Image 1 (cartoon, rainbow, N blue to C red):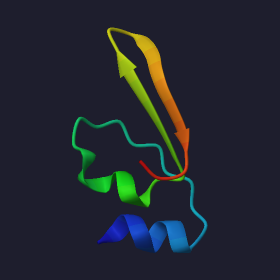
Image 2 (cartoon, helix red, strand yellow):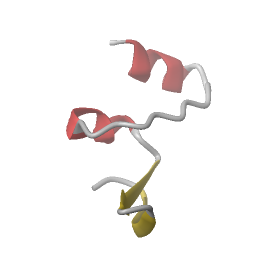
Image 3 (tube, rainbow, N blue to C red):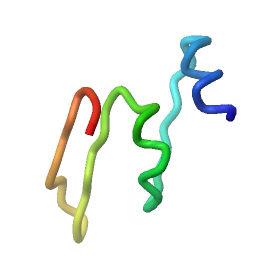
Image 4 (spheres, one colour):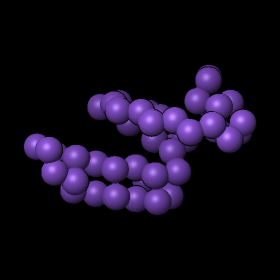
Amino acid sequence: MILPDLKQQGKTIIAVTHDDKYFYVADRVLKMEYGQLVHYDEGKI
């Protein structure tokens, strides 16, 4: 998979998705509902 490889290389990736199967790769996860930030997590969900 490309995302873990890019993370290991120190690359910054911004992903916008409805699919939570890649959240484990994230350093930060922001959840929005109806245009409002409803959750911010620095770490794992």
